Image (tube, rainbow, N blue to C red; front, side, top):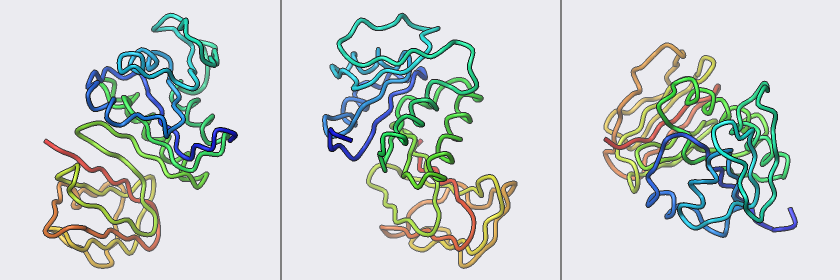
Length: 210
């Protein structure tokens, strides 16, 4: 990466028009990739992406002075996944995805699977909006309530063993969890920060606000 930027921000095309939040989160310290119509959201907050990737079936090809990667309309993966894949290939070790939670449940789930692709490539990845932050956890993570009031844990795509939660209203100690179980949903902080650890498996951590 000749630009020396270590983080990549991807702006997807879900119907999320919280431009104040997006403007707060996007900055020149990150390499910015827009997924298809996500470039319109970047322009709305006065940011020109470093790269735009998409098939442009829902928006015109942008007339901007930046690199554009045109994809075929008929393809195996979403525009957002191509952006994630490109960011991983460029060598970024942290990716934040914005405007990726919308009205289409299938698109939401597809975007969640991007988290697993990043996990398998040893890249830290999160999906973020004002109300939610989604990320996968292996080993341990420390979180606080500075941006999100609640958090929920789910076994992601397989069984989990040795799950522990400390510093929360509901605590766990060395517990097993299956993907169908919901007992770790809607937790909150008793004291900050809270520590979440898992011995084996992958946890989907969803931090949220009402």
